[in-house]
Length: 109
Picture: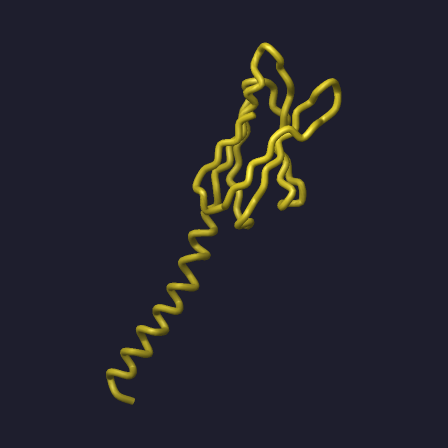
């Protein structure tokens, strides 16, 4: 086998290896998701966020002015649903769609 063919095969293999390795490394970084309860003092409500594409994984309940954050990975297209306690019932009041590749996501409601 000539040196040129070996070099071409080596470059092809390196390119394939890099193309497989790089997306998974970038995807593994995830997104820094931050949720803050901005309901305020005039009409304060407890709130939390849930993630339906993650088996309904949820934040902790936050009082007005409270924040919660997490590093989320593994779901390319994601959704966060914001719930607010109104008169003893937890109602879905906000939705945010985002991607793990976004870097950081702020969800305030």
